[in-house]
Image (tube, rainbow over all chains, first blue to last red; front, side, top):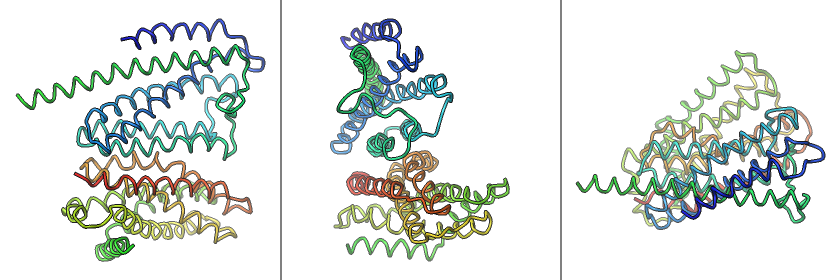
Length: 215
Length: 215
């Protein structure tokens, strides 16, 4: 409950900060503001997939059903945020780069990550409880792809901006960085709130299934 | 090491006698080539079609390789054998690599004939890229094939999972192949990326295979 309340407060505050309070960017102008949604969504998506990864590993080791439910719920919420990333990216790209999409290394691999977890969710939908091990394996391999995604932006030639924040000396003015960090926190809280709801759903479904089987 | 060779020999013998996989996979690959060729695709672009054909036909072939084990209850035998499951994974992967390399060779030849694919002047590096690409696809596909077969899930999920998981490796392989056939540009980045993916998938396979075939 607390997470939901915090998220419900932080998210609108973050949006207002992003749209109204944040200073205008020198080169890109107003469109840059979508950064405050795009980047926090990336953070929330990665958080979702990380939790799904850890839960999947734990499931493979311990075979406790709640780890499987946690993995599924977290991956699903993470996928929602990744979808947001893939939608806000082009919206940002069109006015700034002149193109909705390029096959730049980072865009391509983000899209592929989306496909990986789309496949994961389809596997869970089709295989049901019997597919728990299968989906855990897919989540683990899918997650381990993420570092290669980040490094591919450096290894191959790229149009996407080089990491400006996630590096030793962040290159952003203090006020913008502060709002960005606030929004990251707000999105993480939103992820947690959504995860709680989704997980509660899955727990209910499991309990219902157990009752049906017994009766 | 001996379990690996034993399984390698068994699977290759089965394939030699049944001639199950290689003809089916090659036919699908040739169809893809025929369709692209008839639509006007020629020259260097053929390299991309070759790799698409490799990964799509692998998606079909690699499910069959494990499905046979499950159908004929051989999994129990594999589980009970006093062998580290990692060797089973490596043995099966090795057999699958041989199959995919055979299909690759056939498709490459067909592409030269039907799509005017130039062979370029760097056969040794080309061979390395072809081998690494095949190995990357197979190392992921062998693990996924086991996972899906044990879960008795629909085989239709295989392309849905294999394609996104191996997409970056396939991109590196096809990009590298185009460069190699075109001229003298170095492909060190692509080779390194392929090696990294191969290492990742093999590590994942070695670590997770025993959990996959567990009941």
